[in-house]
Length: 234
Image 1 (cartoon, rainbow, N blue to C red):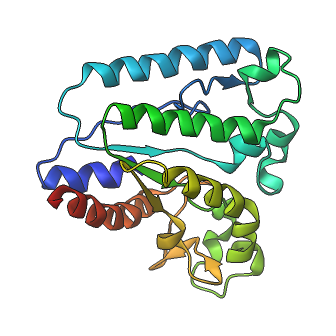
Image 2 (cartoon, rainbow, N blue to C red):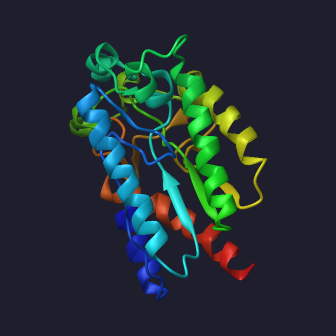
């Protein structure tokens, strides 16, 4: 998502930097991994991000995005991620043998703590609800781009809601507690009432089953930019 947004903002003279980890979203105390070694690395990375944030001055807006359902449920989506489901990233609490470990409940607690942190810092946050996960690789559909796509190359909106609907509802509730947190739902850009699109204007929106392509990045960024400008005028 960053590439498209960075270029659009740059044209308006607005600076943007990306602070990111792989498979380690920077939620407060959101340390996770497939073993304690990975958890420790994740912890160090998250602490480094917040160290950088504290060193920055004149932050106008935090745009916070990560995959949601995969970390909340510890289950991948579709056959393409079945190996992840067998060996998911788990929160530090799992390895500390916490009684009644509940990844979903912990995930919401960590999001809430993150919202609370930025609220106390009085920093506006645009929290991005995850783009629909496809559950398959869009590459297998490229040869059929100019032909009617089979159902295996489409994501039904109903399937998307079954996967992400509950967490969207819970995060929307958490957001309502904080005046400085605003939601941006990528499904409003990438889906209609029946289908979440893999292709638009004969170009793929995804580079794999869950990451946006360069074109997808620009499609999303243009919509997000309109919202950012409204916030700026306020």
